[in-house]
Length: 269
Image (cartoon, rainbow, N blue to C red):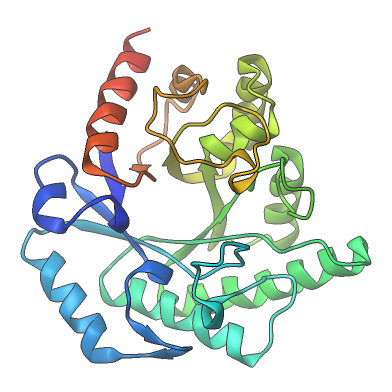
């Protein structure tokens, strides 16, 4: 089992004691000035992590309603212009540079015409999958939380259908168990069905916890330490053939350590 953590969970020196992989979370790395990538800042980040010999995955920019999210890095895969494609190519190119096998990206947002928005998203994902193929990396399309009805690909069936519509070996699924728990309303049986439906497409995992219901804060997507909410992490045992990273999307080293114990206990059940 390869354990990983998002780069916002702590500094590389502390994380290296506890995980083998780090997910470079592009919007929070501080490597952009507006929408311009500052190569010197990126090089410093890569120098810092290279000391500790991490395996690496990359999380590309996305759409966020959070006021703290950099406005110049907003990216909706259902509505992409040249700027958005350039941002995605920079993340894909970075993944190729550091030999990261996976670039995580979010599905699009539902516009006034849902069908047109969906068709546009699939068209854009086709282009991005082709670009990923050119760079020798794979995109992991992440399931979003159903507590926000403006998201595409909250349900496992829709995410599977989208991946199959693109039909590329370079577009698979990042299974976010916290998001799935919100979509399933905290019901462990529904969560198990979610995993079974999406299983064949999964190449990457995001691990965090929540209460399984909508809240005013982030629509319930609180990214708590695994074990602090109601997610049944034992459903991950269904992924018996999974060989990718178990990436903890948490905000502190303490949450990472708590989550590691939760995951260990879940696999003993």
